[in-house]
Image (tube, rainbow over all chains, first blue to last red; front, side, top):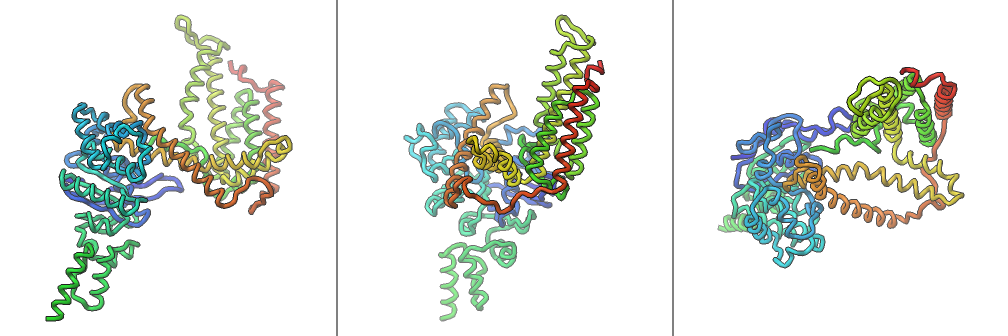
Length: 285
Length: 277
C-alpha cells in the first residue's frame, strides 16, 4: 500500500513564453503509516508535487498510483479518490466559508454522503484535534483567532479520515506556540490512526522532529529520498540547493570537522547533548 | 478542473514588434476607430477587409494566434447564442426551412454569422490592446486621453489608477480562484456534478473565500499605497513620458482611412449584406 509516481513530468502553460517545467522525471514511492516531509527551495516544485499526489493537478506525462488506484484516468472514481486523499493548502484558513464551525467541519462529510451519526462522531473527533471547545461549534469561523482558524481548516480535512493526509506548509505564518500545537496534534493523530501524513515544510527543525522519511526537491527533480537521518547527514548537498540542516545537525557536522567522533546527525538538543557527553567521557577515560 | 485556464483578458504578452512599440494613447484611439469601423461595416466586402486587417495586425504584433483563439473561447457560447437568436428572429430573404410556427430565413443565418463575426473581431482586437501594451503604459495612455475631461470634473488620474489596479489583479484573482477551487475539491466539493441549481450552490465555497481575499488584498494595497504617501493625481510627474512617433501618426491615418472606407461602402450602398440574398 503506497503512493507511487512513475516518470512524472509537469509543465505549466506549455507552448507559451510563460512555459515552466515544474516537475521533471519524478519517480518515488511513499509507504503507508509514516510522516513524510517534502523539502526544497522556493520554486523547487514542492507544492506542485503534493498537488499531483492529491489528485488535483494532472501531470503532463507519467503515472500516479495510489494503492491499487490509477489516478488521472478518465474513469477514475473521484468520490473514492477523495476518501483516500485529503489536502490542506497553504493558509487553509482562507478557504473557510461556512456560517458556523460545525457546518465547516461537516462540509466534506456531507459531500461524502455519511450518515448523521457518523458526521457527529467525526465532528467530535475533529474538534478534539483542533482543540476547540464545543461551545464554538455554533460560532462563525471568522470570529476565531488565526491559529484557531488554521486548526479548524486542517481539522475539516482530517474529519474526512483520508488514508493520505497532505499538508502544504501547515505552520506558515504562525507563532511558535501555534506551530507546536498543530505539529504535535498531527503527530498524535498519525500515531493514533496509523495513516500517512505528507507535509511540505520550510522548517528543518520541524522536519527533524516529525518526519520518518524526507523527499528533497531541487529545480523540479527529486534530489534525495530517504530516512530523516540519511538525508540530513548529506548536508553539503542540501546546502548546495539552498537548504539548511537542523541546527543540532549543523553543530554535529562542525564538531566532526574539528575531529570529534560524533554522529553526523542529531535531531534535537537532547540527542546532541548525549552524543557530546559520550565523546567527552571517552576522552576523559 | 482548470476551469479558469483560458482567461486571457488583461494579459500582457511581451514581444518585440512594431505594435508593441506604439504609443498607448494612439493605440487606444486606433482600437476605438477600429470598433466604430466594425460597427459601420455593412456587407461581405467590408467584413473581409476588417478580418484581413485584424489578421495583419495580429501577425505584425507577433502574437501567437493560439493565444487569441484561447481568449475567444469564453465568448464562444455568446457567439453561438447570437447566431441562434438571429437565425430564428430575422425575417428577411427567403424561407429555407419551416416547421409549424418556426421558420428560418437565409437572411437570418447571414445576419447571425455577421453578428458572430463582429463579436469575434471585437474581442480579438481589444484583447490585442492589452496583449501588446503593458498595464502601466495602458493606464498612462488612458489618463492622457481623459485629461481634457478633467475640466468638467472627471477624476482622470483616479480612474486610470483604478483601471491599473483592476487589470493588475485579474491574473492574481484567477490564480487565487484556481487555488480555492483545488482546495475545496480536496475537501470533497464537486463542481462538475448535479443540475444547474446544485452547481450554482456549489459556487458558494469558491465565492465566499474569493471575496474575502479580494477585500483583504484591497485593504493591504490601500495601506501600502498610503504608507508610500500616495496622493493621487495632483502634481504627479511621470518617470516615463509617453512619446509619439511617425509610426503612431501613420497608424492613426490608416485606421481613419479604414473607417472612412467602411462608412463610404455603407452609405454609398456599394456593399450590403442584403445583396447576398
